Image (cartoon, rainbow, N blue to C red; front, top):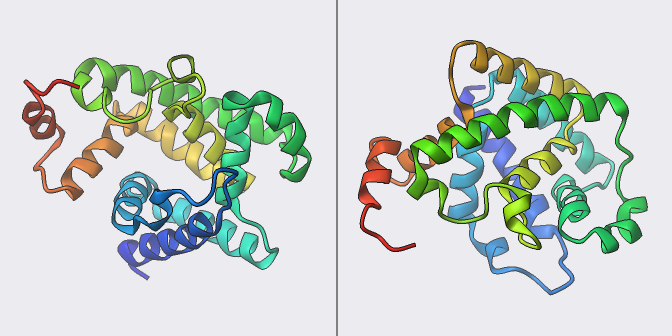
Length: 206
């Protein structure tokens, strides 16, 4: 299986879970927006190594076999920050989080937080679009850091070990995976690179 084929399968598995997720306010419009979903998820998965992606694919397949929805779990975990009172009610329906998993997720998220700050300084216009960067800025709005942290909590410990390895390797090489994800997005939307997207936004009032 090629890297592209592996990513395609992962995205298809995620899409099935995403479209099946039930919301208190009814079905969200984004649940019918395959093109945007595909680009956003591909942008992220492109940063991981093949064995990391393969391990995550196994997580998705095994969850399906158990009748579980990892995307729904992610949104449940996100409520710890956005709706803490409601989270206390629904947390019994979510898989328990082990201390080992928390330790690994904390390490990955801390590095990504540093990268996100660097991204915001280097690409302020791009970073200012969409969701808030941090939960402190977001309030009830789910921020990017909460999305990442909560998604990582749905990964198995073997997958998280691969993610941590990839994250530490990128840091060692001086790469910024937070910037890389957004650059992938820019290219998938037809821009030659992230600098071109940032430049195209100059003069636009956000």
